[in-house]
Amino acid sequence: MNYCSECGSAKIVHKIPDGDHLPRDICASCGAIHYQNPKIIAGCIVEWADQILLCRRAIEPRYGLWTLPAGFMENRETLQQAAERETWEEAQAKVTIVQLYAVFSIPHISQVYMLFRGQLQSLEFAPGVESLEVKLFRQTEIPWQTIAFQVVSRALQHYFADCRNGHFNLHVEEIRPQAKEEKVD
Amino acid sequence: MNYCSECGSAKIVHKIPDGDHLPRDICASCGAIHYQNPKIIAGCIVEWADQILLCRRAIEPRYGLWTLPAGFMENRETLQQAAERETWEEAQAKVTIVQLYAVFSIPHISQVYMLFRGQLQSLEFAPGVESLEVKLFRQTEIPWQTIAFQVVSRALQHYFADCRNGHFNLHVEEIRPQAKEEKVD
Image 1 (tube, rainbow over the protein chains, first blue to last red):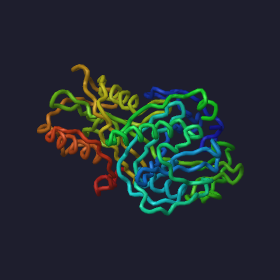
Image 2 (spheres, rainbow over the protein chains, first blue to last red):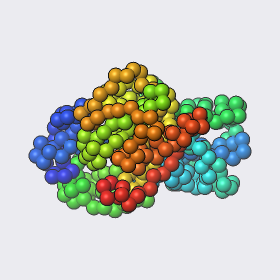
Image 3 (spheres, rainbow over the protein chains, first blue to last red):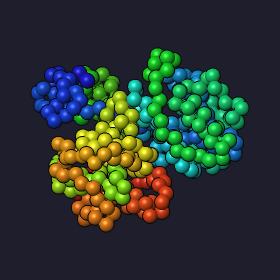
């Protein structure tokens, strides 16, 4: 932040406001405190019998790699609406939400992933503008070496383990940086 | 937003960027797009045998009313850390997290509440600077008429119902505005 979004002053200082415990961007002219908070990424593990839907990214970061349909939650929507919308935008797929399945805190990039299980309503799906390709995969077909993000690999590992157990638990976890991840996040 | 936080220009327009689907604050001078996203509020239902801990608010909104220890998640922390920190700040209480218990989307104010069950580690607790009073309540003692927020009442209703059933499920819900809530949110 270079300028105050309230008054336009360039006198932005980074310090702890009175009564607070963390440094914030504060405008020394008008006193406005500019908070920054973690962002929510909502998405779906889209199921069709023993297959799940992955999208190959048409955007950076991780262009060309496979991911779950997921993206930034918008103001004025619910988590479920965000997950359904992202699934529609990236995979042109309609889902029926089954359950909240994985909640991953990623503190080093200040994100929280909220992934739902969603049943595909029909076999109609297609790449949205942010996807090169959208495809159903059985567990044995998952392209583990070309998955875009650690959080996606982790969700899929839990998912297929739970498939084997026949019981889908909620998974609440922290994702820590990996050497490979740190380069791009 | 009155001024661009990147370049200081007052030429902020509210329109849909190319390839996007929602209007954003865009700087007509430097082209910066200023996104706004929902905020996470993390907190705890703090348990001590058949009692839970409530805090009486020392701040607006809802000064003097009872709430669960909860507050805005900060960058670079996990959900659990946020819930534990808020419980410490508001109730000076140390908890051991048991489970993620309630996930409430509140789209009309663009917030997502993430409430954990947390066991009080000892009977040491006290009001933090944002609390007037901190107290343990049995179900029959809950001050239902002076609970600060609808989301808190809802969480407590689920909690005591689950206590009776002897089984604590995750609750994922939407909180819609009530006439009383709309006045202050």
